[in-house]
Length: 68
Image (spheres, rainbow, N blue to C red):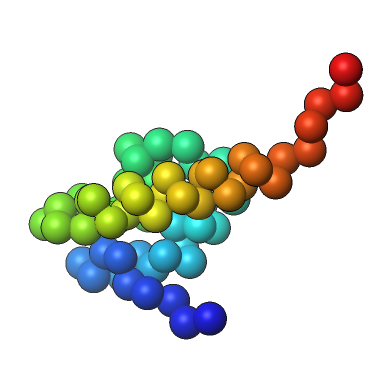
């Protein structure tokens, strides 16, 4: 699957955002700090947030349930 650029200014792709979510990123501020996403013109913030939220949801759904 080809990557889609979310942040053109800093060359951040949807794959980059998903990888960051898998590595533990749980907030947009943390994503910005690690990738530079949306820290230039800001036009991509909405799409980056949506992509991050979706990626976090997928990661959390894959976590094993804790034994009681």
